[in-house]
Amino acid sequence: MLAYKTFRNPEAIAWVVFIHGAGGSSAVWFKQLRDFRVHFNLLLLDLRGHGRSSGYHGNGEPYTLRAIGQDVLDVLDAEGIENAHFVGVSLGTILIREIVDMVPDRVSSVIYAGAVAGFTIPAKALITAGQALRLVIPFRTLYATFAWIIMPGAKAAESRRIFRREARQVAPDEFHRWWHLVPEVRQRLSKWSARDAVCRTLYLMGSRDFMFLPLARRQADPSRNAYLQVIDGVGHVCNIERPAVFNEMAIAFLSGKKVG
Image (cartoon, rainbow, N blue to C red; front, top):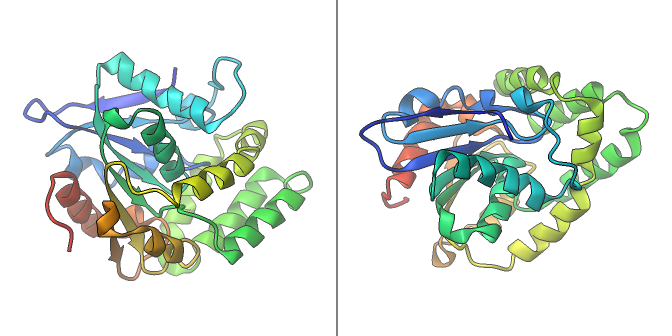
C-alpha cells in the first residue's frame, strides 16, 4: 500500500485528499497543512515509486491510470473514508480525473492546481523531445530541464528546487514506467474535454502558467460545473509560489462558497 499521513481535526467531518504530480511527493503540500487542517481532515499520500512509497510499484499489474487510481482508493478504504474533496497539482490532476471516472460518488468536489487539461503546442513539443531524449540523457538531468521549462524564472525557483529534491527519490526505472502512461493520458484528456464536470470543479491556476493555463480556460465553464480562478504573478505550481492566496481560494471553494 502507498505511504500516507493523516491529519485529523476532531471538529471536522469532511476530508481533503492531496495528490502530487509525477516526480514530486506529498512534501509539495507543506504550505497548505496549517490552513487546511483548521477546516478539514487531511490525507496526504505518496504515489507509487515516489517519496516514502519509492519501494512500492503496485502488486505486479501493469502501470495504468486506473491501477494508480486504485492505489489511492485502497488508502481511502483503509482509513474508512467514504468520500472526500480532492486537490491535485500538475499531473496529479489527471489522476484525480481518473478517480472521478472510477468512483464519482466518492468525490465531493475537486481542485485542479496547475491543471493539465490538455497539451498546447509547446507541451506537445516538450513531450516529443522527452520521448527522444529519455533513453540517452540521465533522468534527473532531463527532469531538471523540464522543470525549468515548465516553471521558468526567478519566482519559480523554490518550486523547481522542491521538485528537483523530491525527484531524487524517484528511480530511473520508475520514471520510465510513468513516461509510458503518456499515450493513455492523451486518450483520456481527449475524452474528458468533451464532458461536463461530474462534481463541482475549480481550476486554480497561475497567471504565468503559459504551458497549461490556455487549455484550463477552455475547460472552465460555470454552466458545466467547472470554474476558474487565476492567481496573479505566479506559474505552474501556484500552491507553493503564493500559498496564502491559494489556501484562501481553495478553502473557500471546498467550503461551498461562490466563486467570483
